[in-house]
Image 1 (spheres, rainbow, N blue to C red):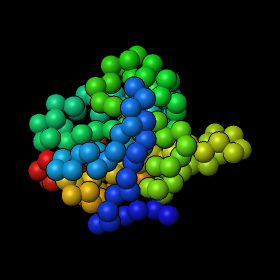
Image 2: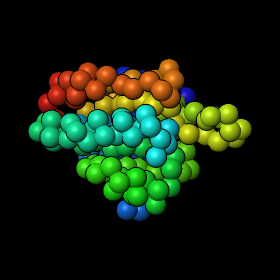
Image 3: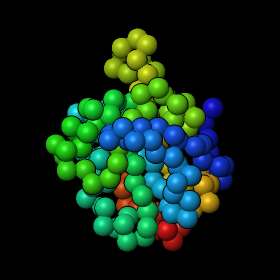
Image 4: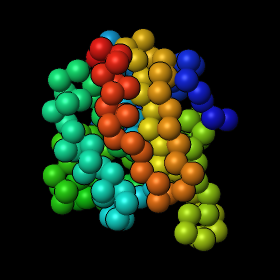
Length: 158
């Protein structure tokens, strides 16, 4: 079931690339940007995460925490983050709990029967834990409007 703007954001409770559990509730009082992506080491996903990397100062200036989320294992995410100099945590949704909770599971990615990845999607959550912005790509090749995401986060005031 998909979540929508105005609803409480589902809790995360998933591992980051350093194998530490990250909970959304640990960021109450802070704007959180969840950037779901299909897979590390792929072209469009690299472009997307590097675009968020390049906007880090803008997100930091408004007290917004960016998280990238994919179903990749934390070990692969760590290598990919280091290779690309990503300056925000990646979360490993290897058990698909977040993609299912947020309604962005992408079954049979690239024609691989049974392989469930994540759609490319962005959710912005306010300091009270409520979803205030939602974008879901129609195709894994679509990227979000990064300026729109940044402006939506800034509008929340961190």
